[in-house]
Each structure stands twice: as structure tokens, then as C-alpha cells.
Length: 306
Length: 310
Image: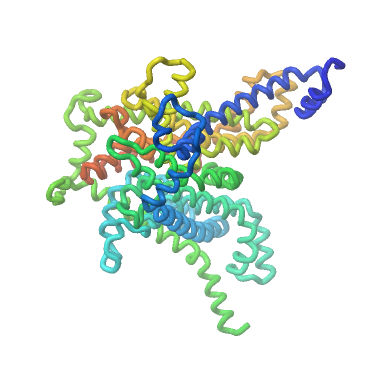
């Protein structure tokens, strides 16, 4: 093929082709694949781009026509404003505390329990596992009435703590309801994939069950723990409905609520809302970009039992 | 090692199972079993919105919810119930089927041996990890009638002459909700299906190729059988999630305009929290619970194992 220039040759080589006469259809197929994926990625990222540029424009430019797709004078004023005029540092702190504490509880209990379900046969283990997994099938929204009632008037600790309504504790308790069964399930499936010979080796070496678990099993389980932790954190960070039902002030309201507060009855402060939205979205974007592998493994372990 | 620490060690070892499983079981019982029982209990009461007095009404909340004033389907069902159920079916049906087809297509493309596949996969996952509220508001802003990006694009490319008030028209608002939902949840489908595609043995494709199987027949006879479990999981989790999800609907349309995008989840929230009628909200919650378990049961039958919802 003397007519081909050398750089086309190199591109074609880059597509991993070995014979000359099959290149047109294979290259075309790959170009079509890239084209379709590129289009999809564009559609996926355009709204995020749009909210990003909205967040760095003054309100006057956000509300001007024709619609701007390139900000003329980028500014960080909206970000400064939401921290100056609204307690955004408190919302952020609430989100951090609630999401981290929930994650800590779910990862600790989920890892211990998941390990035992994976390794030990004990009376009623199947029924218990099924109940834990089944518990997660309960649609959260169905439970807003009892959760609101219980948190407003806690049945057992009421005499000691008073109402848990509008506290971070209420949110942490509630969010373990979504995440703990999920954590148990991911970790159980993860441990199922860890060879039992490791446990046996630990026993031969004279470790107690606890020592073996801590010294031998936990280090191997790090990727599973990471996946569980990332998902539990993201789920708690993003949660909206229960935060809406169980909180009413900045002492417990989280970022998703803070963002929704920009909607007044008939007016939406889009520029500031976009800035708040970007802050709320930041962990998701960062986790997505850097820990995609763990998110995928956790989700598939949680969703599809192999 | 001393005698006593030895015996503590042995005792701790004997208690390994109860100590590792016990706290989780107690926690879950407290945080799930108790509220669930409370849900059933609350659904039997009617609360006076003014005085807050509770009155035991038995199953009246359920009969009101499902039957109400006759006139709906078959002349016996509550028209409101029929109406909002229909919205839920439209919302869930379109969202799930569109995001499934789109997700399958993207998963098949991403499963190819393309350079930069890792980055592409990362790029398509992100919408699913953002707070749903932020996505909902983002799409509300995109569909905004005056200054929104969608009208902007359509106008500036000359596709339309007059701006469309997407969220002020019932049908268009439902369509906007479905688009946002597809945007948010297609990544989930992609992740689950990609995992399933990795189970397909490479040699089978080679064999099919040698046999001269068409692309379609390769998908149908090689890919599909291996992908089936993942497809069922992805669809079920999507359906269950969409039925009960409130976030997108609440921030984008609040069930409006009129009641044209009111679905079960927003109806439940409105009844229980906005109108302060916990008994009726709880009854609707029980119905939602029953429907969810019915769907799970169907899947359980198809699968023979426990599916899991995220």
C-alpha cells in the first residue's frame, strides 16, 4: 500500500491491525465506536459543564440572552457569597460528619459481619443473612412516617436525649439503615472470593480467630473495604429525602438540603444554586474520577452475586 | 502467656460469631424492624390535622387509598390512585427502558478493546455519583423556559422559533423528568452490564466468527445468554429504585404542573409530610412496600437467588 502516508500507517498500527486489506472496515468500526462514545460523553458532561459555567457567572449574565455557553467574565463571587451569606461551612461540615460517621459504622460492622457470614456456619445464618439483605429491599421512602415519628419522639432514649429531630445523630442512624445491609452484602461477597487457605494458615500459625482476622484477613480485604467505604460515603453524602424530613436548621441540614433551599416559591437564584450544587457534587466528581475501579467493584459485588 | 489471658483468648474466640454478627443484627433490628412495624401500626390511625389527635380507624386508610370514591378502573378503584399509579408506570417504564437500551449500547461499545477505554468508563460513570438533588436542579435549570440551556441550544441553532416552557406543560414536564432520570441512571446500567459482559468467554466470539455468524446472531446467541442475569438485576434494581425515588421529581417539578407528574413517591411525601396526614402516608408506604417485595419475589423466582438493591 504505497499510497498511504506514513502517519496514516502509524495510526492504523495504533488500531492494532496486522493485515492491510482488512483495515477499512475495522478502522471504520472503531471510528464509529469512538464517535458514538464521544457523543455520549459529551451529552453526559454538557449539563455538568453548564452548571459549572453558571456557577462562575454573575447573576446578571446568567439571566441574559442569548444564552451564554462561554462565560465572558468568570468570577468566584457566587462561591464567596454562599459562604458569606449562608452558613455553607456548617452545611459542608454537617455533610462531612454525617457521611464519615455513617461510613465508619457501616464499614466496621459490615466487615466483621460480612466475614463471619462468609466463613462460619452457625444456627440460622442463612435466615439471618436473608433478613439483613431483605431489609435493604424496604423502600426508604415508605418509612418516612415512622422515622419522623421516632426521631421526633425517640422510644427508648427519649428520656435521656429528648428529641433527635434536627440532629446529625438522627441522620447518622437513618443512613446506616441504607448502608449497613449493603456493606454486609458487599463484604460477604468479597470475603467469599478470598481463599479459605489463608484462614487455615493463620490457625496453623497459632493465631486466635481475632488475630488471624486482623493480621491476615483485613490486609487482604482492603480493596473490598475501600469499595464499601466509598459507596457508603457517597450514598450518605448525596442523601436528600430523609435529610429533608428529619432536619430543619443548619445544625443538621446537609448540602443537598442547602442546595434545594435556593428554590424560593417562584424564584430560583440560579447562579448561587449552581455554586452550591458544584460544592455538593465535588466528592462525587472526585471519587468518580479517581476511584472508579472501587465504585465499579463495590457495585457489582453488591448487585450481582457471582 | 499467662493462664488467665489464655482463657480470655479462648472465650473471645468462642464468642467470635456473636460478637461479629450481634451488633449488626441489633442495629438493623432497631433501625429497620422497629420502624417497619411502626409503619404498619401508623397506617391504622387517622390523625386530625388540626388537633393532632390520633384515632384508630383500622383499614380505612387502605380502603380510602385504593377504593376511595368509585369511578377509576373498573369503576371501583380510587381515581387519584389510578391516576398517580399511571404516572408512576409511565415514568418508570420510559426511564427504565430508555436507559436500559442506551446503557446496553454504551456497555457493548465500552467492552470493545479500545484505547482509552478506562477513561471513557470513568467519564460515563460520573452522573450516577452526583447528588440526585443537584442533578435534578441542574436539569431544571437546563429546561428553564427563559434562560435554560436547552431552549438556548434549540433557539441558537434555529431548530425552534419560540421558546418552549418545558416544565409548565404536563407531558413535556414528564418527558423532562424522564430525560433527567435516564441521564442519572444509565451509568448504573452500564456498570452492571459491563460486569456481565466480562463473563462472556472470548473464545465463543472467535468460534462464532469462524462460523460466520452475523453481528446480531453473535449478540443473541453468545452475549445474551451470559448477560441475562446482569440484565435482570439491572432492570429490577432500576425499577425498584424509580418507583420509590423522590429526589428528582421533588426538585424538578414537585409533581406539577397541576398534578401531571405526581408519582407514588411524591404523593407519599406530600400526603405524610406536607399535608400532615401520617396515617394515609403510612398506608401508601405499606402499598409501596408490598409492590417492591412483589417485584423482588418475581426476580427471585427468575433468578433463584437474592438480588440486591442499591
